[in-house]
Image (cartoon, rainbow, N blue to C red; front, side, top):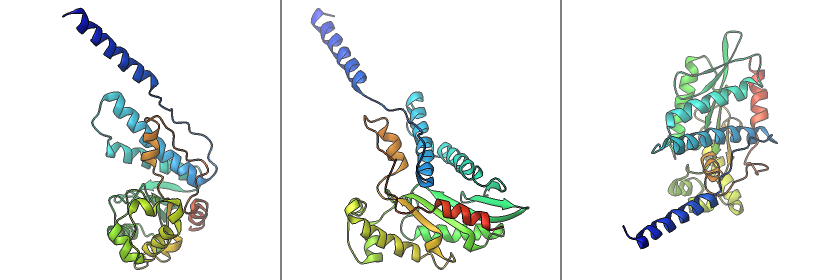
Length: 250
């Protein structure tokens, strides 16, 4: 191997070293949250962040959805248990619900979804029907079921949106701040259509974020940026009311 070839290899390695040094990554900092919505979003983001870190460390091809689900469920149950000390908190046998139990009786249920990626369009209605039927097994009244969706990102369908609000708009456009009224109109209609299954869906189903998504925020820490969650303008702020309602249902 000649000197010129060795010099080229050396230069290439030095360039790679420089690129690695310049690639900035951020450690996830779990700072104090201003709202319960922000805290819920952050603990979800932390699970995705830890999974991405593990994936890179072990050279895995993709994140483990099973591990993410288990870790999210643990974090969500801890989130509620610190605020509902007199309740037992369990996971349902099916459909990933958090169940609340007091005096040996189930009193309410919460299902938290990162997004509606698996439940776009009418599939969300079918999921809700299944959640209600699952709760009936535990003796939980349909008025005591809450569904929280953290993000609209990855859960929209252009044709379905047009069908609901008679307005055609791209998925990426409807999530922009200037189109929030359109998004809220779509959301209101989508939630209203759950009235066949829930007693008062507008008081039981909530979307928190528009474009912001826990997985996107987690990935930003590995891509030379840091998407901010603090002081985000949430679509709704239901968490305190939900917890208070759950406490009353005994």
